[in-house]
Each structure stands twice: as C-alpha cells, then as structure tokens.
Length: 360
Image 1 (cartoon, helix red, strand yellow):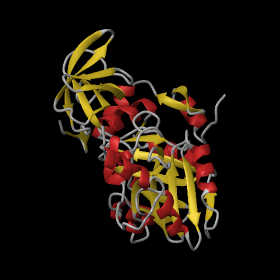
Image 2 (cartoon, helix red, strand yellow):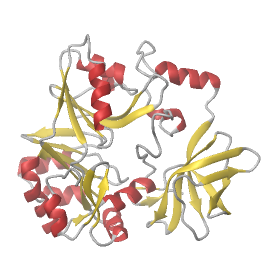
Image 3 (cartoon, one colour):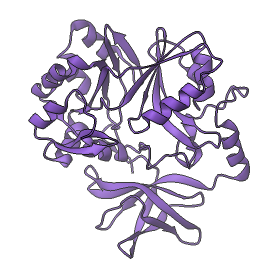
Image 4 (cartoon, helix red, strand yellow):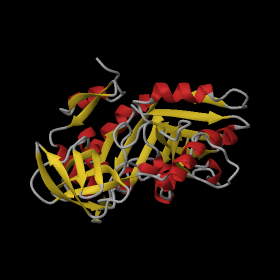
C-alpha cells in the first residue's frame, strides 16, 4: 500500500482506477482518460495533486540563498504573489528537480515533485549551512489543480466573495494567500486555471463541491497527455540529472544575469556551451498509424540518432506525438523505430497545443 492523499476515499467512491505513482496511490482515470482530457481542454477538470511537496523558505537570507541553489533568479520576483519556474541543478548542470517558486509576504514557497521529495530536501538542507534561512515542509496541506478555460469562473462561484475577487484579479503566474488558502493561477495542462493549496482537512468537502458543480474529476492519464500536448517536461523522463536545461528546451529558465550570481550548476552549463551543446529537445508528430513511446529510437538521416523521452496518442490532434532528445543539427524530418519498423515523423517545436489552440 502506498501513501494516500486526503482524497483517497473520494477517488474510490467516484470509481477511479488507482495506480502507484512514485509511492502514492493515485487515480489514473475515472472511467475515460480521453474524455477527461477533452473536458479540461474544452471546459474544466479537477486534479488531486496533494502528493506534491510544498516547502516554505523563510529567513533574512532566504532570497540570497535561493539565488545560489536555483538556476532561475528569485530576484525577478519583484512583488508578493509573483511566481517563476526554475530548475535546481547539480554541479555538472544536470537537473535535480524542477519547480514553481512563489514570492510570499514573509519569504518564498516552493512546490516540488513528489518522486524527488527526499533527495530535494536532503540537497537543500545540505546547502543551508552558513545561511540565515529556515526550510519548512508543509505535509498538512493539500493541493487541487482546477484547469480549463472555464476553471476560474466555475471556482469563483463556489468560494467566498473575497476569494472570488482574488481569483478574478490574479494574473498568469501569480499566487496569493487568503486566510489559510493559497490560490495560484498556474498549472500543468497548457490551459488557464488554478492551483489551490489549503489545509488537508478541508480538501474532501471542497473537492465534493467542485465535482458537484460539474467539474470533471481527472486523473494522471489525462494530466500526462495534456502536459505532453503543451510541451511541458516530466521529471524522470524529459529531464533528469544526466541532462541539462540546455538539452531539455529549458534554456529560457536559466538566469545568466547578474553575471556574478554563481548559482549551483552555472560552471557546468558554461562548460557545456563552450564545448558545444550537442542535443536538443524537440516535438515529433507521427502522421501514420502507430503510437510513439518513451525510449524508441529516433534516426535523423546523415546526422545521427536520438531517443523519445515522452510519447502518447494526442486526443486533441488525433495523432501520436512525442518529445525527443535529438542531435542539434536535426531539421524538420526524422524516423522512429516502432516494433522493428521505421516510420517517418515530422519534427516540430515542442509545443503542440496551448489554450485550446493547435500550434503545429
């Protein structure tokens, strides 16, 4: 038996197919993964993501410390409520984890992946020595992600007037507190929506309110196809400690200025640039019948080989799509080996669908 979120009983009552996910018992789907996917793209759905880890950072040197341990620069968060995406790197520039960082009134809030919790905490704690900084994990909190074009308005109808006003005023990549709730306009689906962090004891009742209002409960299956269509990386597949942001379509998340900010991994990345970045992460579209899967070989004529990192059938495109790490010289065509046969694929920018629009 794995760890369980506060909504485990609700998932069972709704008929969810439960699976192990990084040591947690989580819903894969509630009957139809494809239907849940379409609900999020066209209206809205709710995901239980309470398995993820919330870490609050406080102290006089919290900002200075985070500038050293993260590749992005928290000094860019000029006001309370602002958020940014960042990676956390090892000395060679490999990705230990990726996360969202929020600027709070009295410090910062990190939301990191569930599967990397133990190593993240150990790595951060080992680098606190000599800094006036306090790290506080918040296991008593739950997280719900309500995603889709109608998500903010639907949630606003179910909460207090003050929280409804906050939801309507939030800008993309902002998160603000209202009492013991923290409401952020962020997500992992390529659609507008909210991520709400709040006391776990309140989660079952609010989840029931959301489902009762017609917001579709959605599982890990739809979450994966939605994030893949949006070109969002999954830790452990598209990013890991053996690959840097520069080879993972995440160069934009590395803050090189100010030049004197010697964050962990900076020298490793500079060495990779000096040597020459050899690979990149691209999107693939299979025009024929078949399914693209992780670890299938990608062959680029006259250039070399790569590998699919994530692949699946896209419900929005009705085609198989993938993210793949390939040689830098790769242009717009390649081949993928599926069950011993080679199939032509189109190479595209690794963002297939955003805000309901097909981009390829």
